[in-house]
Image 1 (cartoon, rainbow, N blue to C red):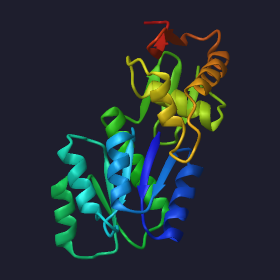
Image 2 (cartoon, rainbow, N blue to C red):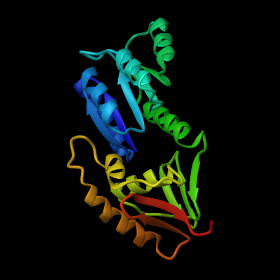
Image 3 (cartoon, rainbow, N blue to C red):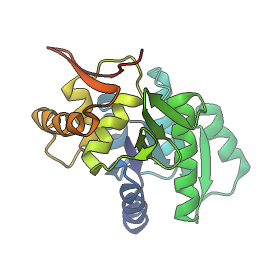
Image 4 (cartoon, rainbow, N blue to C red):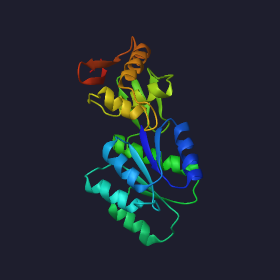
Length: 223
């Protein structure tokens, strides 16, 4: 899953980004509201983390523009302000959660997981496709009740497929979930990851189906 983190304090931003990446998420890190607004209007994210006190456009303005475009993307606001009025204002604009600075990285990760779980599976803790099961809390896959070993890229591809049941994902859509803004996103590289995943799913009652010209679909063979 791909997360947008918008924080203008370099040290805090890098610490949060490193923690999220260590948890297996793809993270785009930006430092001002104009860049955030552009990214949110052109890129595909599972979650946005917005600092309130951003330059050029503040976090409230970025959030308001996002909601005006009809986007239901979960948003976690970060703020150094203790004023309840500010929190109420953010929630009324459409923020899904608030976290006051300073905070523990473990709490931020827990809130991120909760928001993603609610948005992906209506509060469910697991997604499954035949014998393939994805634990949204632990962010781990199991196949026939055995842990499935995956690289971070393979995980990102399989995560995108299983959390969008019945939906064909194009190479470009999958690449958007695997690669960040500062990486060389290659749709052709997706073929390599899909090939590797097929090898790991081989002989089991779940497969990745190719729809030529459209993309890929995760399918249970027991259905």
